[in-house]
Image 1 (tube, rainbow, N blue to C red):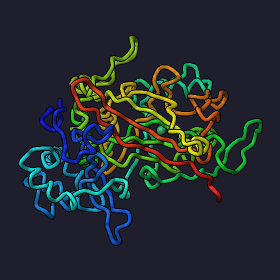
Image 2: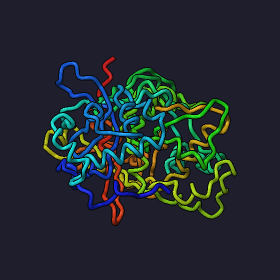
Image 3: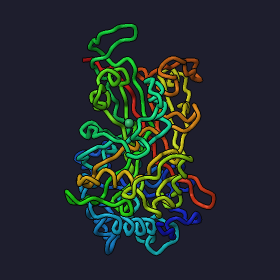
Image 4: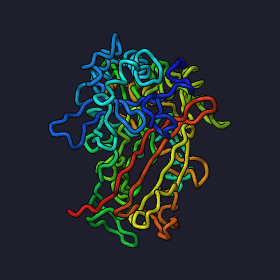
Length: 443
Ligand code: CA
């Protein structure tokens, strides 16, 4: 179990006043990202830490010699334009950096007495910053660990039973596309492709007519493994640098036609949206949870996927949600509307089991690789994490507060994914918005 320490204490407040009571970024969170100041000429991307409505500039803090030891090593690695070098350093320097950043930003500490007078140099309003991808992503693997989503998909395809026979043995995944992962806020263009339009027998080429989102937990790899050298489940979490939310946009009509018999290709490779801040394992320590016991009759995972400690504490209890904000809602001044709420506890596999399975045949992971968990639907329709599930494959309307209806995502729709950890006795933290607008392809 990760140790809880003074960085988690609820009574710790920050002299950055917007952090106190902040829904996502109180001083107990301190997520890592890459930013540049949007309108500052020549400003270059570098590492920062979100604190309330501000970014704490790690390079400026290094220049002011505010760090020492392992924390300084980590902060210097974070001065680059991506966090890959920092991520390769692994857990120790990350935890040391968290402790020193927390002390520098806390009210009434010796360290804050050195930092606060430099506030003008150290802090930038997030609203004035461009947030970049936090790492150069070498590989993106998409798992399928949301069992309800897998069952619902099987039912839509008419499979009986809905789950394939391997599902409860194998953490099913496919290699997805790293080059088109974008940070929140970047519009995603509706792809063209081959699809069989409803009522027709043969495919035509044109824009996707059945656009969907997927509510997924994103997993960043820290230090990797040597080719040929599997990572056991007991060590899986040591290789994870942090977490984000991930919208695996899915062109369902293209997917249905092309995925026979191999998996998704163009239906998933046109764009993936992630929240730009890396939420660290230390920040999530209060929200660790046991993997819920498997239902009676389900097989025990094979020994290479089993670790007692991982079963006790390798899952997370995070509330995750999907919101939609249509052009119609925006024009009326209405806020985004929640259309689904779920929880990471609904995952059938832990993140350590994903790491162990990915590497059991010798595959090497590298710092900056990212996993998607698979769509995390819960047991009842209000928990469904894709629009295909919410509208029963486009056969029922979702009615929105603006009076509009949706069966699939339309051009101009903003889709937001959010995640929050809430537990009695601890400060609530959030991931920050994972949002993007679907726009017309125009090609
Ligand atoms: Ca997916």
